[in-house]
Length: 111
Length: 113
Image (cartoon, rainbow over all chains, first blue to last red; front, side, top):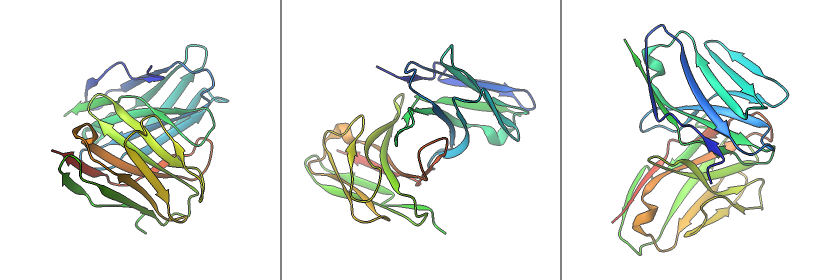
């Protein structure tokens, strides 16, 4: 049973517009959430995190929103740039030493 | 400052062969992890070591063993490789529990024929 779900395998967005990547989870014990970006032939790179005591966290062009009641988080990228084209993974942890990852969403930013 | 170093980067094995994937970190992180990435499956945790001297199973441990040699090194061993173990393997470290991010290595692409 997939505890962390990214239901959109791919997303295309025009350069300069907003990219919204979504992630749903089933385990109410999850209280730390991460987003990663992955380019081909490289390891994932940490982007941004959020804990369950917050509902929003910003870092430059990247903002993560957490809706605990809906068990849903989203990553907003504004404005989107061609260099943002990558696979994005969300991950969740119940505050233990391990994270469960989603299946990823491939973002393509069109110039 | 290399971060997390994985060796080898590529490997082709025949079914039944054994091999060890090496991972070393210079970040002084206590926790180390092995994940595999397969198309449509995301990253799945194989084994992890929360601290030196401890190891625990993740989601998909069957067919693998691990050794936490010291604080810096965490190896993953395939005793008898199977085609189902064809994957990209990533080693990662974690600074601590909480909203800290993993630091990943660049991966080992393994093909079992």
